[in-house]
Length: 518
Image (cartoon, rainbow, N blue to C red):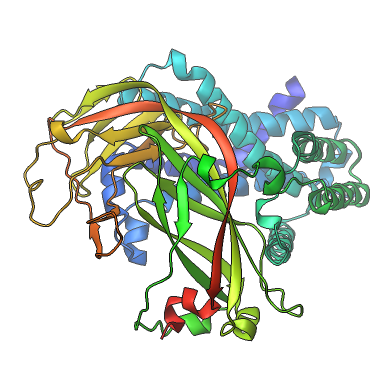
C-alpha cells in the first residue's frame, strides 16, 4: 500500500498542470450543463466560431483530454522495452497498475461523480433513486474511455506512437464500414444473441487482459499479437454467416392482415431538376404510397425496405435490405419511401419498363396506461416526462429534462382541448397530432456525462389529402400548443412485427428519381 501511495503522489506532482486543466474543463462543462434549454436554442447557429463559444466543444474536449491524461500517466513509466529507469526500482507490477488506476479514479471519476450529483440536485431530481444509474454511467465511461486509453498507453512508448496507432485503427474501421455498405443485406443483418455476447466478451476480455499482461510481463510483441488476434477473430465473427436477415425475423403476411394497408401509387411528374444529384455515387428512388387502416391509438413504424425488379441478368443494382425510418398514425394517408441504389447500375436500366416487388418491414405499437395531461404555463413537472415547458422557439413542441434517459412514449394532441390562437387559420386541417419516443428496452442510462437528459417532444406537421379519392393536392396539417392544451400520454407496447409485399408494374427507374423525371 505504501508503494501505491508513493507512485500516486509522484504522479500527482508530475502531472499537476494536466490535473488543473482537467478540473477547469470539468468546471466549464458543469457551468454549460446548468442551462440545457438555452444550449438547445443556440444549436440552430452553424457558425464555427459560435460552435466554439456556445460551449458545444467543451464535452468532446473534456473527454479527449481525459484520454490524453490517461496516456500521459501510464506512459510516465513506459511498459515498452526493458531499459526504463523505473524497472531498476523495487516496483511490483500490481502496485504500479493499482497506482495508475487510483490516479484515474481520483482525478477523473471522483470529480465527475460529484458534478453528476450536483446536476441532479440543481434540477431538483432525487439522488438516491438515481444513484445506481450514475454508477452505471461511470462504469460505462470507464469501459469506453479509460480501458481503451489504458490499452493504448500500455502498448505505445509515447504520444506520437499512440496517435499513429489511433489513426491506423480509424482507417481500418472506416475501410471495414465501407466494405459493409457494398454487401447486400449487410445493413440490416441481426446476429444471434450468443454471437453478440461472444463479441462483447472478446472486447471486454481484451481491454482488461492485455493491459494487465503488459504490466506483468512488459512484452509488447506478445501483447500486440494477442490484440491483433482478438481483432481478427472479432472481424471473422462479424462477417461469418451467423446473421439473421429480416426475412427470418419479420414473418410475411397478407396485406389485408397487416397493421396498415399500404399501396404504391404512381409518382407525379416533376420538372424540378437537382443539379447536385448527378454528382453523387448513389441514386435515391422515391416511392410514394397510400396508407389507410391503422387502428386508433396505434402507431406503425416503417423499419426497412427491399426493392427487387425483373432487371437483366447482368444488372445487380438491388442493394438488399435498407433501413427505413417513418411513423404511420391513424390519420396519415400518404408517405414517401426511399431506396438507395448504385448510380452505375441505375444508369444501365433506368429507361426500361420493369416490374417492381417492394417489401416493407413494419412494427406495430399500441398504447398502454394512457392518461391525459394538461399543459401548464411555464415549467411543470410530470412523473413520466420530468420537468417540461413549452418550447418558445419551436411550436408545437415540449422541452423536457429527465434523469438518466428519456422515456418511451406515444403522445397525441387532443383537438377539442387545444384551443390556441391560430388554430382556425384558413386553409389548415385540424386533426390529431402525434409524437413518438422509442422505448428504452433495457432501461439503461443514456450515454454521456450529464445524468440529466434533455429531449424534445415534437408534434411535427404531417400531410393529408382534402378528400379520399387522392384527386387534390396535399395539404399541410397545422398544429399549435399553448397553456391549457391537453395531450394524451401512453406507454408504447410492441404488438407484432410483420413483412408485406407490394407490386408496382410497368415503371421505369427514372420515374422514381425526381431529378430524372421529364
